[in-house]
Image: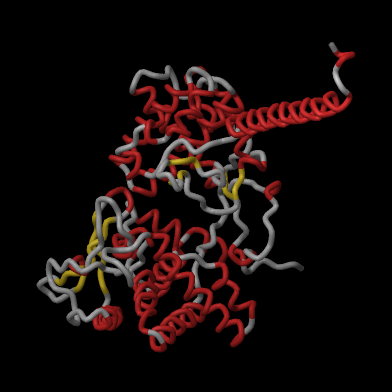
Length: 452
């Protein structure tokens, strides 16, 4: 038959055969590429748990990508995820939002390491396995390190919840004063505080699993004593605070911003209240179980003003409000068309949004403060030089709490009164953080030493 076929017919169908061959090769390569991408995706760390509010109503059916990810791991991965889910629901009910986030991050990392690196169920771990995990946390692979805060889950255009590919279990950011420089992930090292927090969370996780008769012991508690990366800390800790001059530049800058544009009245009020009343930024933010209102300011029968605050450890405390702060409160309320001073049971948000209703998140409040820090740094740098202004570039919102408390110590206020306003469980905490009495005595006694 081949001998009777014309050369033209052969040439035509040879071209078709070549085309079909190319299609087959392309399809094979595409399948290989999809398989490789799938394998790489499934071998990478993926977020396991959402926010506390989302976890309350969470069902894995709403997270098909996460569900598929768990199904590709070892057969015990699903039960481990369930243990973490139960533990975090317990934490979410009984602890603060900040504690939930901290424990969620640590449990998530620990389980991912068990899934992808150790490939062993955590109920079989010994002390040495936890120490191996500590080594991993001390120097994680760069593929596990991100350089920015990323949401764990995102909703795509079809309304499905997907894992965010940009998310990483560890985060490394350049210091605030060097944010224009590239981050070298190979230089990542956790602080002693971070490593200690890792052990605290994992120990609590195992303690919960022991109480539920899931694990026989707590290897994390044993491992902490032998971790070579944890050092006994007896150093003198410097309080991160602003000097009198730096604080004055910050307050003056906030005042000038508000004088030139009324939208900055919030910024001025925030700067004043954080420093003067020693508040944490979270204590001014909207939370699931607490919404700060103007009605939380109240006056006693002796005309003393107080502010009711929902703080760490889910404790409510009353903070003394000095007379010197009231003009800032009156100014902010006047801007909002409210009466000069708060009335009992007033439901107006303490810090209001410019658009929409309700109070603001910690992240948004922090951005308002950072804007003032940046402008104050530029202003002070041009006035007295970069060296004296440097701390304004490094400072975070929490520095205002430290600044106010440190200035009160220097003013000679009773330690017991200050400790209660700060919300510390004992005066020794206040002394350790702000006073450091024994360190000051040692420094004074050491000044007289001679070289010759």
